[in-house]
Amino acid sequence: MTEIKFNLGNFLKVLRSDKKETTRGLSKKIGYSHSYISSVENGSKLSPSSDFIPVSYTHLRAHETSLH
Image (cartoon, rainbow, N blue to C red; front, side, top):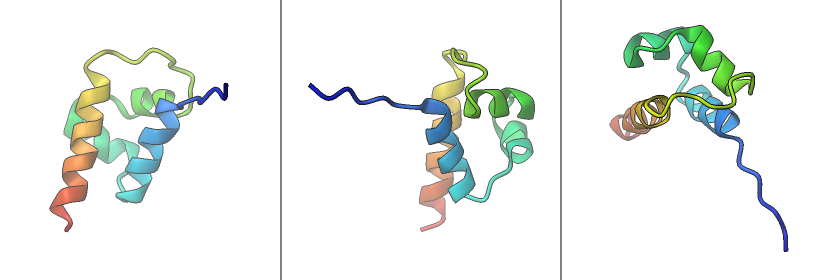
């Protein structure tokens, strides 16, 4: 069986980059420091808070749909 690995940090980084959002800009919008966001994206923070994931994802997805 093939194992599929999912990298949350890379996924969020790609979403953020696609929206041309900086870590500083995102930090102001979601209430987490830019260094926290960067740590998650670069894999140095392997267990982000349970609130961070839905807050960041929801913001990035909402930003995407508002552009269409």
